[in-house]
Image (tube, rainbow, N blue to C red; front, side, top):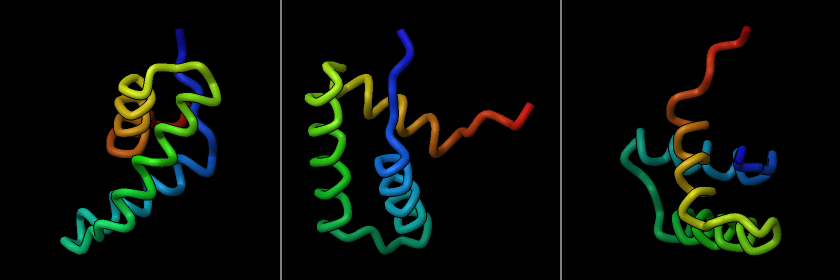
Length: 66
């Protein structure tokens, strides 16, 4: 089963990943991403763990364009 990710969730994680790479991730950013992951998982009936794992993979290791 493919995990559904919203554009908003992807943008939030991309911003957090950029902060991590710059060494400036804030607690507020991390908390906002975690809250969004949890809300998205609940709204879509998906596992929170699976949503987070798919989101990390999507942002950190994107598929090359075909």
